[in-house]
Image: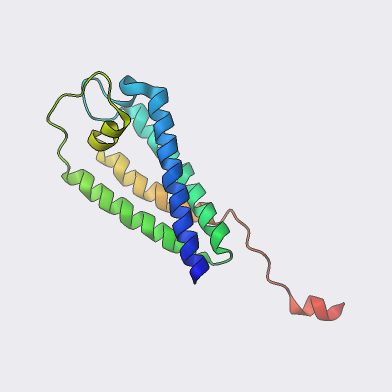
Length: 157
């Protein structure tokens, strides 16, 4: 049980760190003009597609790490997928109710302001829930469980 809990926690931490690093890199590469639609806090199509791709691969990593830490406990990966689905759904609902910032977007936006004020299209937020959940489940199946020893094989030798 403790290994399962540790798997979910460590897998989630790996996912969160990887997301932070990947989005920071993507923002540095795209810059303000590439990350946003002109004069708006709404993220660009390039950013949206990049976010979906990053989200999938980061979810794969999270599921992989969860399974690696938890061992053969398949329930840990399922629990992590449920956690991602619940948190993603909460984020989706918050995004639905979020008003875009009233002030105009400046030429350059600091990373922390970008994270706090960006407006993501609802289709991206909704798709992220699905991609994250499925990615964790797929990533958790990448690590092969150690085969259970066959007692008959030992007695035949």
